[in-house]
Image (cartoon, rainbow, N blue to C red; front, top):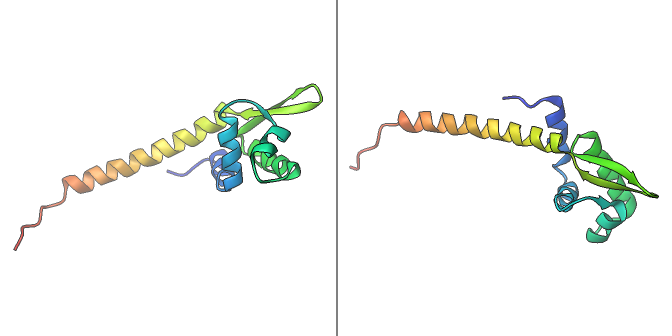
Amino acid sequence: MSPTRATSAALDALGDPTRRAIVDLLGAGDRSVGEIAGRLPVSRPAVSRHLRVLKEAGLVRDRPEGTRRLYRLDPAGAEAVRAYLEALWGEAAGRFRIAAENTVPREDP
């Protein structure tokens, strides 16, 4: 199974530990750049850059609220990653089952 371009972008974005930490924080609800930066050992500009990557990968959405922007997880992006991993695991589990069923037990000497 080959991931779609969008799923590949999402998986690439999640390859960075800071971005995964941001996704974890957003899993608890909407947050501003300042709120995210306050919880991580990175600057506000760095958080903004990470959020841009996550947004371009389809994992995060933003919306204006007053003078700031609030970020949240994009359910469609998360679903695409979940579906890919589920399909990948399903294929691997199927191959493992076939191999196990076709393995002849060894006799002890």
